[in-house]
Length: 103
Length: 349
Image (cartoon, rainbow over all chains, first blue to last red; front, side, top):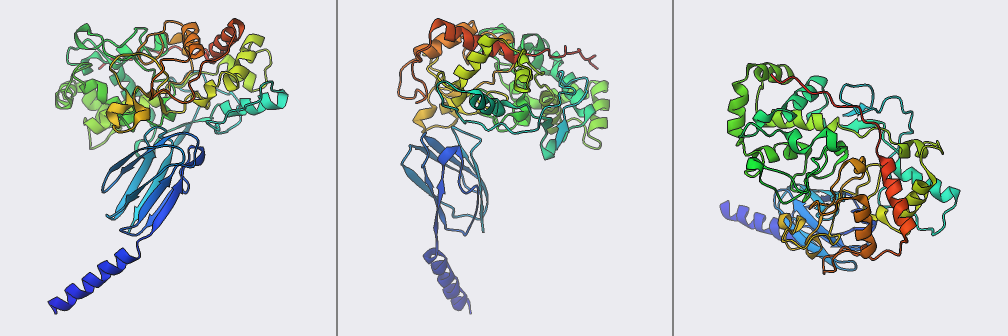
């Protein structure tokens, strides 16, 4: 019985990993687009700087990340591997906000 | 919660303005070199005054709370020495700054940065020159505890306030069943600070349609502000700040500003938060280090383009302004000061 449970759990974990998605978030006009995201555990977000000025993404929540500077035309990604609600801001332009809900 | 800007003992003269509600469309530059009436009308819309003060849901406005916050703000017993209050550095007589090049802390020692105003911080996005506090509540209790500033550990302050019966009574009234705590000290001071709103200025009356409210030099300065001088790229919205961080090429000291709070971002080296410009002619000296004595000095700095270094904001470029244009910009900034109602002093418990 225990062995079956482990096998099922492993298969579920494999299935989750296999279906992890990457969502692209734009930053044009000093605005995160979209401004709200619903993700699954293991999904990642690609912050694409399609703006004309540099941005710097800070992620705060169950885990925290400082993605550093993202120049116009560049992109950086972060994986959300823990469930919860994350507040994302630009460290240069704090009015840029994004809420990420991971389930 | 939002509180209508109506009559209050602490609201600075914003009664009955009849201004249209609107949200300033920040960061929008009107680029025409020789704007017509329609262009100027569009520029004006970027600076419409709001009709309400925003208060957060978790710290709603209450008159008694604001009054308690005012009492705390003016009370020197919040400092370990007993001689410094919040108002020592944020003095209403100096546009809620202190008139010093840099702030003065405990034992009269000079600190590294100029005291920022608390005017219009209800609309603030992030606090301190380097943005190390994400709420006015967190900001409010920072200087009280900072070793170089008021230097009072929170536990010491709470015990001290508990020993003053008048404070016990006030906290019990405002926070029934909770009393004196760090959270409630912060909530009270932040609520008071949110009520400090710059009064209607000549500029606002011009925006509202009174063509005689400001001079022709100031009108030309407003156009320059939004076009050739590009001040609006950072000083946007009705409070004239984007609440963002920029290296504007000031000061060659080792104060790296926002980069100390958020490492790994080259653009944040020497970057400080854009200050608002309301009541600016009452708030000398200028810049985060207080290195410029007059508004003329500030305009000259932007004309020259600032210290050239990798982190210098891309918007910082030498400006081809002649002497008259520089004067016009200053004339415009001088229209941003209204007749703020004098602040009455609280009687301390």
